[in-house]
Amino acid sequence: MSHTRTVSLSKLAAAALIVSAAVGIAGCGGTSGAKGGKGPSANPTPLGSALQQSPQSPGQQGQGQPPPVGPSAQAWQTPRVSTGSGASLENETPNNVCRAVWAPYPVRIERFAINKVGGPYPRPYLNPESEDQAERAGARFAEVGYQPASDCPGSKELGTRGAQKPCAADTVISLAEPCAIIPHFTEADPQPARPAKYTFNITWYLSKLCTDTTTEPCRSLQGAQPGPGRPVRATWQSATIVPACVVWVDAPGLEAGGEGEVAQC
Image: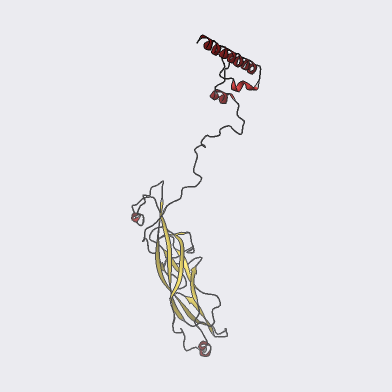
């Protein structure tokens, strides 16, 4: 039994000498130090400390950090809510040529669509006894439309309402600031043009900026709570029926003895 124990101790001693030699070689700069870390002379640097001590290159600094908090890349947009109803537009003809259009409170005309819904309906000549009967017999119905006008002069003395701006898209109108529209011949109209009446439907797409819900149409907003710092734009449609007439104006100097002119009626 003692012989076996002696042999085991001798083998352990030899193994210890081999390990000590390996550690000594690693301490002198050998590459086998990575496997000698279990030896009594090994003092490995903790991994965390090594990462903290190693300098970062400029391109690596700040990696893994969240971006700074700043303003949103997309600006806040004013919500648009359809109210289904709102102010109806009124109109007046101050001079038998154009029409002034207004609203009871300030509204914005976002766009509009004009469609002919009636006519031409024949109308009598103003002077049927004039000498140009033959020329009038060759007259045809013209094509007539409606368009914004630069202005529509009224008369304060006569109590008629005027307008100084066209009813164009993105125009704000009110009771005090109407806009103007006017009938006109479309391109390639025949002359002489027969007297006739036409009717048009104008669909107005309107809006109003709401900062509270005290008045219409802001009171009818559903699912939105406007405030001074969070306005909501209410939108709705309004329809206006307007007539236009082609009238015959005698003019002896013209080949047809006169011509058709478009006007209000």
